[in-house]
Image 1 (cartoon, rainbow, N blue to C red):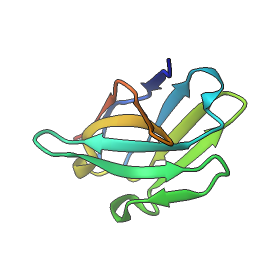
Image 2 (image 1 turned 120 degrees about the horizontal axis):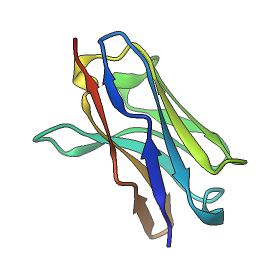
Image 3 (image 1 turned 45 degrees about the horizontal axis):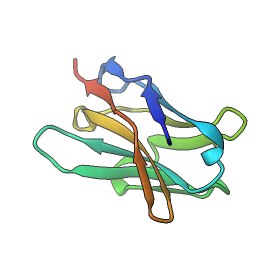
Image 4 (image 1 turned 120 degrees about the vertical axis):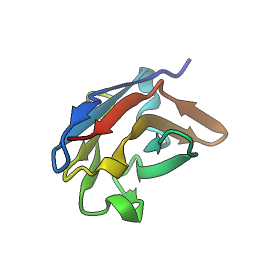
Length: 115
């Protein structure tokens, strides 16, 4: 059973920073594409960033230059460093792993950007 556990969300002022973490169970971490998605109230869940097992990254345009996705294979963990946060970044952030037909999700962590 694949498990993904997110942490690191919270309340932050505009312009602030947060780092999200996603701990993956077992030895599944080295395979597949890891990603972060987010879902704002009343909206669909959208892609934020992905990282391959080889470290190649991809970002949605709205977060380029502000967010950084990374992974630590020794800790089976993927991170999302979020800087220069804006109110429109407010959402529940979900960790995801895709490998073949497998599509695994974490439980989500709330990020609120507000003064």
